[in-house]
Length: 321
Image 1 (cartoon, rainbow, N blue to C red):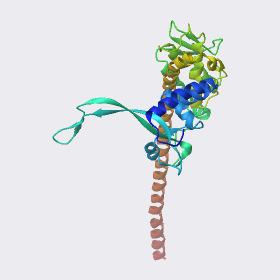
Image 2: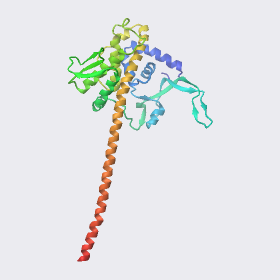
Image 3: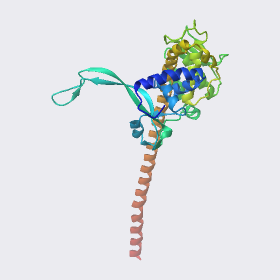
C-alpha cells in the first residue's frame, strides 16, 4: 500500500480486491495461515496483513508491545487494518465523581495500526512460538484442551482400526491407541475440528453448490490451527478454489469465517491450557528457589552460631593450663 493517508474506504476496498486477487493467484493457503496466526482478526484484516507484510507472525498494537517491554524499531511502517471496538456513549458521573455507564454501547470502526514482532525489539516475548516440542511437553494439557473443545463428546482410546472414528449417535470419538504423541495430537485436532464444524451453521457455500465444501472447511481449519501450533500442515490440494466463479469466491468468505471461528476455539483452548501449565510450573520453580535460599540461609546461621562456641571452649582450656 502506498505511503499516504489511508482511509477506512481505502482499506475496505483493498481487502475486497486483494481477497479475490489472492484466491485467484492460488494463495488460499497464505490466507488460511493468517487465519490461524491472527485468529482474533477478521478475514479482511487477515488479507490486509498478508498484503502489507506477508511474513508477519505475531502482530500487536504499539501500546500492547510497550506493555510487553518491546519498542518499535526506527523507520518501521505500521500495518494498517480495519479496527473495531466497543465504547460507551453519553457517560455520566455520580455526585461523588464515580463514573457510571448511563448510555449505550457503540461500535467504533476506524483505521488501526499494528506492528509485527519482527519490527520490534526489547524483552523476550513469552508464549509466542507454540510448537511440537511445547505440545509434547504439555501433552496432557493439550489433550484435555482439545477434548474439552468437543464439549458434547466423550473420548475413548482403544484399538479402533482407523486413526479415529466418530460415533455421532452416542456422541463418542474413538481414538486409536499406540500412536505417537504427535500423531495423537494431529488426530485430536482433526476429529475435534470435524465435530465442531458440523455443529456450526453458516450461510456460505453449501454442498449443493460445491460438492467437497465440508472437506475444504475441515482441512482449511486443520491448516489454520496447525499453522499456529507448529504442527505438520495437511497435504490437501486447495487449487480448485482459484477456478471458482467470482460470485462463489465471494460467498466462500463466509465459509472462511466459519473456519476462523472454529480455529480460534481450538487454538484459544490449547494455548490457554499451556499458558496455565507454564505459570504453575514457574510458580513451583520459584518456590523451589525460595526454599533453597531459605535452607542456605538457615545453614549459614547455624555455622555462625557454632563458631563462637568453639572459640570459647578453647579459651577455657587455656585458662585451665
